Image (cartoon, rainbow, N blue to C red):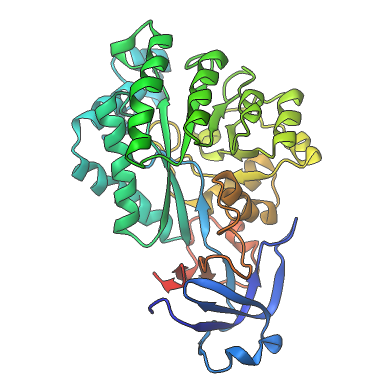
Length: 404
């Protein structure tokens, strides 16, 4: 179907438009024209102005906003399956890293791979997300760690949006790890990113946001702050990997820059929660990494909820710590591991995920004026989406009003 005028009818519509819950409209109708939602409400209340538009009968199926994966490392070379096997055989992370494994093995594979090879492998992962109803995916760089390969990754991410009916938001994550060329010179590397790489990415319109891994094994708050100041000077919003392994105060630092989101945050303290709440920074939880790393430190869910911090969920798709390409499984993990309700989990991959990307004005809810990014599922109860494991009930997906 082309992006024309039509009305989806006989749907159970989970608008996700309210502050909580699903926002269910029973026997609902959604009118779409030019890729935008023109009406959402009960079928009985459909205005006569839409009377001549084509009808698509959904037969009582569930209609939700298209899902949003707001934190991925979808573009990378190689595989870390053998490292996974070695860990299960008893090897430590340090032993694997000493043998050339870990993130640097992915850096080497990514640097070696051509743009075409990276595109081909990333499309397989992207297609898995789209097949479950995703319409928007964030993709980070961070496995190049030099000028040529960071730009290569970002160009591939842009190409993916041209190859598939979806929206891709790109995030510059040059401050992901310290490359071997800068061993022992983290400050010099941050200077290199600020002077050379980030301006080049901005000049090519390859970057929508800037991220950094602020952790005791990565970059300090001071180094992260310098990068964020450079991002702000380029009018780029920031995000952060923070408090995953220890409390470095990264989330509060990022909130001071008006960060879109702070991600992982298992070790977030009360000051960090308060700073995020004051800044409107979204807490993006990554249960796939929590599961794969067999973590035991839970994010401060009660404190986040009490402070009114929006909570998003994401796959964190990456080759080392979260090789996950299913938002439906991520929703289940968010419920079983972090004790979110199914409604909170769905909000985490729709409304709040959109906010984590600065796209709340465009997508993430079913509301008049927003993009017609929609998912139709062969279920009646929206809790089914988080409840089942391994079942994909997607019936249809619409991106900007076009059935994809």
